[in-house]
Image (cartoon, rainbow, N blue to C red; front, side, top):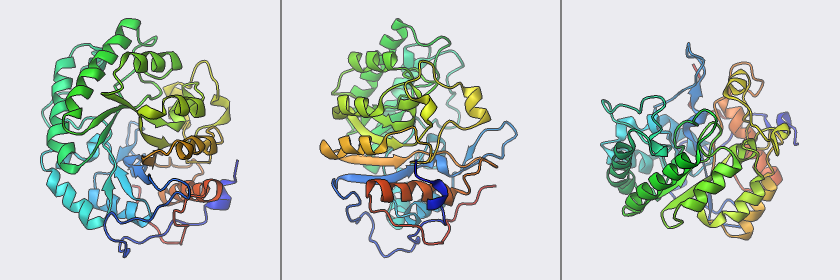
Length: 352
């Protein structure tokens, strides 16, 4: 594993007033010019809540300016970060145009104020209570929010994992629900993209393969999360190669070698005590050269975005700037991606 502190000397480099015209980026990958690079909104957060949870920023202009500052091309906010714009997508588009950043995708369903979330144990994604409401809300969001913004795929986590793991009937229910949502969203140019996640219904390889087998490849696609794939006990390079035709986006995060090939992944309690995620190239659990080898050989066209949590107080990884710099400089050194190196200038975001 490359030494993290060798890379983290300062934050990275392009200022928010860069002269690059909106959306006019030179190819960053030396082999495949069709790979675009960005970050999700999870990096812009603070662990200051009384419940020990991370609170993500909702300052969209600041986040977009920082994305540009770091030399990245796109931003994928989480659902709670776009609620202000859910019914006024053109205001968000104006911000995107002003900052020269593209909207890569959206994480999950932004629920309007007054629209109740499913009750615990309902599992609407798995065919349970609230399924019809979920389907209708997903279609409306694709039609009224994502389509006007030109977003062509949509990342979704599918809710919590049932105790003991999903049953065969629940996995079939998930597949049926995803097929119906995907059929509806694709009418608006949006590919439903499932995001298999630790502690979710597609955590383990058997769950993953069952759902992918039962879903229609014309309607249901995949976000390949490098960290979650390894944490779920899978071989991320093998799975990437096997399901490549259905992958719309890569989430880039690292984890640790002890989780490779596990038969039972870490618990949420373990993750709360110490993060099982790491910045790209900083954990040693993910074979990033292998993953990029498949992406380049098969000519992936789409987004590869950092999906790394904001650093926790005292975890030794430094600031948000340090964590992004570590990921970028690993990609520059180990993978040859032409993202700008650190320059000593920090971003606008400050954790509270």
